Length: 183
Image (cartoon, rainbow, N blue to C red; front, side, top):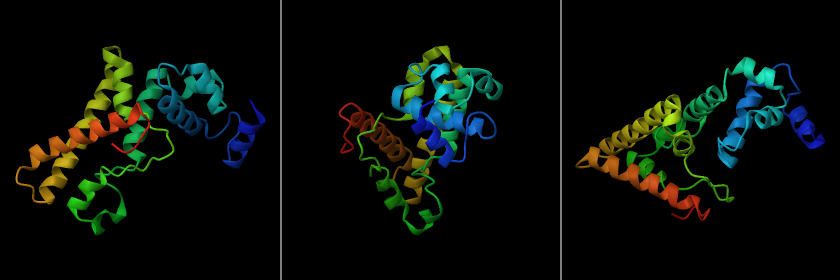
């Protein structure tokens, strides 16, 4: 393990093995799966980046698919969600919250699109568990946008919710290839 990685782990309160292995595995998965892709990230690389042995990784997750599933669930649970954006949401109008969907927080060129979409494409039909998580997330997203459209008193909240979800997905996809948050 490189000295830079050791220093990072020490600052973060982690070390090789021991407590925090599951957290380190998920942190490494979050970074590697998003930046390099799920298929491109092997279990050996994941274990190395998390500073755990493959045996420890498999003790926490019975398979790579289980890591992918937890990676997606963690994103679903922990990442800032524009539909449920936290305690300050009550201070903003539903219309302002809808418009905030299209304000990109990323400006460092690290755009790789929606991690759920990426996982669905990489998993294909071979990993139905991943497809199920992705479908659930996308349904919740559309439902959240539709709910905000209803709160904003849209004439047809279901239609507007669906249209805004498509625009959001399209803008996210169009930002990926040129790595430009402007769309």
